[in-house]
Image (tube, rainbow, N blue to C red):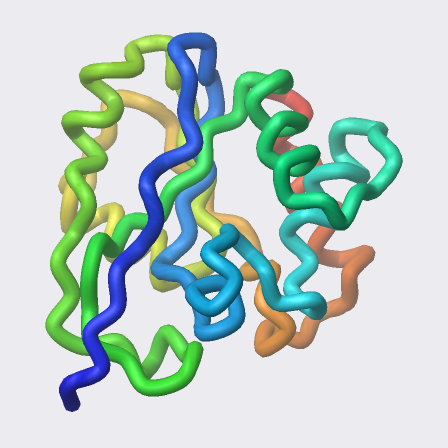
Length: 162
């Protein structure tokens, strides 16, 4: 396998309190150079719903919205080999330096993992005992087929930390 891909830089500010971690961008996101660009991925819809904002398809508005609400966004995997977009196809991954990010942004006080792959990889990075709370949420990917309402209900825990 020679299809090596790379994640994007983090979206983070000095005021970020919440860090949401995905695994690594899918094909459509890489093509568009945007986090969660696949039109059927429910990430942005869930975020806007949680924040009580009118949904926007404009990427700059999306990024500005999470920044204004002190939410940081990144992936646990920096580079890997993968054909397609499935997390199960990820091989030879190298992790982003999550520890350094947390040290550089001490205002981050909770981490939410978008799906099991990001959670499992984060545990490898931070170890079993993290100094800040870590929650695993259902993946917003269209491949994770539970309903939008069920995903939203589980993602509502984020509102506790806003």
